[in-house]
Image (cartoon, rainbow, N blue to C red; front, top):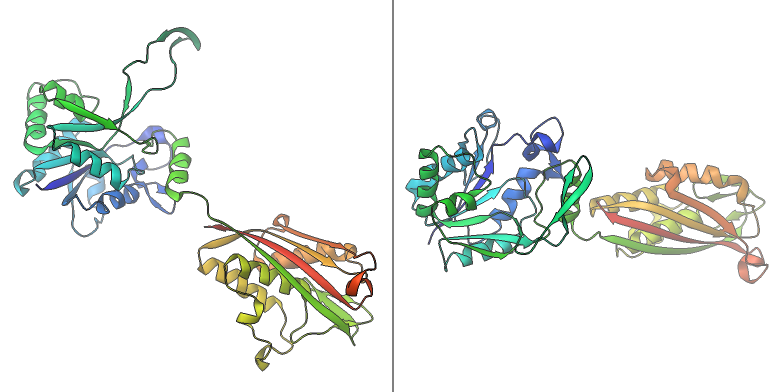
Length: 380
């Protein structure tokens, strides 16, 4: 058995909106056609793939290696027939016809359709209609329809190659109206079509909102990472402290190997923690003299860059500074702006706040400052 996939991509898809046909529009980091092809290329049962394109698109499209392209016709049925005839000399015994506008098709559904062809000449996935059906006139309900036995058709629709090619040729010779799909062509030729369970996720892009629905399916479950950071620096000699990238006058300074910005250090640890990348000491060891006196924004920029390299964007940052003095409130907006400049986030995604420890512990005795931070990362 040799199985081919025939991807119908010759339509103009004007209902989907945009300034180009829907198959060429961007979707979750690729184009609609790229996602569809990827699913069939990942199906080991598929031996050959052919794409049927609009004649205007053929010259500009560079097909991936091993994929053929042919020109479609004025109707969907004509395009499918053109694809079938282009495959005729290749020894194909099974063919799956699929709409390019169903980019969420899975290799498992493809395999199930092919397996069903062992038991009959045609098979197609479908989903039973579960919603109530109304008839409507002038935006008012005028009646209902029984949904018993009604199914929503999907693709890929699978066929024994010779039988569906003969069915399409007979349909064209009889000059019949354009059919709804290839199952209609098969039934008109007397073929028995087996129905198998479809996938709710195998949606078809028809209208603009469908792009968002498809993107949600293709991106899968949202990958969210949360990290916490905690740091402490003691007071020592000095005339200022660095907190969240802002120089604040104070009668004492914070002690540390770098500039001792306790706020930035806690934020770094929160991001590294979300990435399962240890803490700031792993990336910038205090034993290494090159980091002596280093401004801590260097560390935070590194953490942000590492998140990006691993495929994450920072959704928001939240930091709490714990100290009696200096007072943080008058400087919080400036800190927020500094953090936005360092990280590239909008200021509205960064929270800077402070609290005291009610004169308890080392912060209450004004021996140092502590900082707690949380970072939320989302796969980009």
